[in-house]
Image (tube, rainbow, N blue to C red):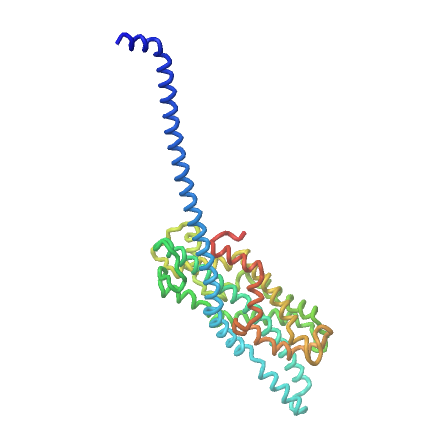
Length: 372
């Protein structure tokens, strides 16, 4: 016992220091081990989060592509067919061409003055139908894509929140089916209600631009392109900057009052339906400067394609080398139906969809990211 006391007295300091060192080392090891475990857990969480983000991005990309396909194969064909029928009815040229053909076979049936009036009328209506078709196919194809992207985004987000997974548009049922159908049915508003105002406004612009153009005037590719763009610029400069939005969708004063509320507050008033919210969002997109820029770019692309249309460049004189306006009018009449042809055969719609700015705009719209 005395030996142990003596040993402790002589080596106490070394024992205490050693114990302290060992204790500190053990404590530091435990801290390090706990920190390492936390880092490992964080790395696992980050890996899972990254994997989940990549999965969500992949699913959103698939859903986005499905949405575009739905627009091209379902909504747009129906709306385009109905619109083409209405344009053909409201801007029918056959009565003018028949009278002119009859006068050609029976020279004395019409006076020179009457013939000139018929030709002038044919000139105005031919260009009106062409430019109305250019504007309508451009706006309608973009408008429908705005609709399905807004609707698709809502369905995707609501489905993901409610079920923890994504579903295709046709499988989701979180937005009331009646509101969906009512929203998509508004694509016919232009054909049913807006077309007369569009035709009247466009015809006014055509008359102003063509007022100085005579039937014997020489037209080539550059002059035709310039003339069409002048008409469109004249048309867009008339009235309020976005008056054409009222030709595309119903004008509901209630929605104007709701717009600021829906933009600033995520909680909708109790009397606001899902249809109201979708319409407000659509009107805001159509009235935005970004959408206006996309429309301008798309119109220019379509006009360029129309001028280069093979119907202008073949048979009985080429537009490249030029021809009198009177000889150009029948070719304009022949090309007009192709402008509002069904989407699967309509290369003008394909041209619009291939514009890079158009693709980017709808990618950002679907992701609900500001395009500014």
